[in-house]
Image (tube, rainbow, N blue to C red; front, side, top):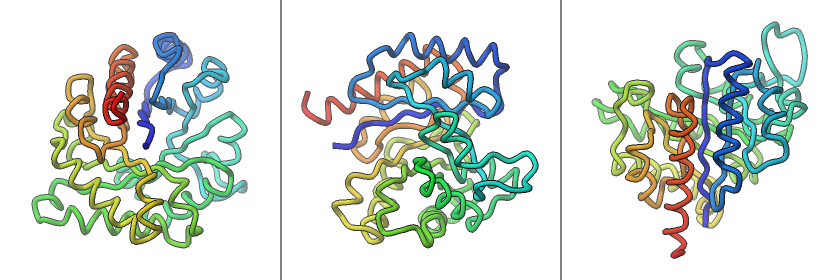
Amino acid sequence: MRTPLVIGNWKMHGTLAEARALASAVRDGLRRPRGVEPVLCPPFTALAAVAEILGNGPIRLGAQNCHDEPSGAHTGEISAAMLVDLGARYVLLGHSERRREMGESDAQINRKVRAALVHGLTPVLCVGETGEERRQGLTFTTVEGQLRAGLADVPADGPAKIVFAYEPVWAIGTGVQATPTQAAEVHGYLRGLLSELTSKEAAQAIRILYGGSVNADNADGLFAEPEVDGALVGGASLNPQAFITIVRKAARAGAAARGE
């Protein structure tokens, strides 16, 4: 069984004081999460502070991006090695906001995926279509292209070390989320692609998250879908109680799937 994974992406929010307060509230509310893996991805400026608060507890630390080079003259960038040094276990790559705002290409994202794997980080590779692409019936074409490009030249055992996140661009920060059926349909398609690229057995063990206006109210419906292995949570992760509720709902859905 795949352990549900819930990642809180704080994006560009939070002073150090705010980050410490938020991380402390989540830590205190999730002292012993069972059957679920929570992750917090604060801004770079708060990684060290949040790492100190989380310590060696069950909540993992993640970052929102990394550079593809281990070091060098890259002003303003952070390497995968630096993230590992801070205690990060996960890194978000290919988020639609970076694709759109920073102009990140599939090739650049692929280099970052490979760099993260080399340094022992778990990449969370994000894929998703725009509203116009969905209206034109290009959802599967878009996510397949992004997935295949993201995995180019990745070692054969690489996909099993990656988490994938389906985040329809039209649902991010809009308050409009994909229906559970829509999410499950794309997740199933992605798992089918992964079966072709790896094996059916390997693909069944890979976690695929949904991201896009996930909140405490719609989480139950999403997690009820067997193909949805958790969530990449944006705005709701800035509210500790909302994030804690989402994590607990993911745990309950996982337990139900296991017949517990």
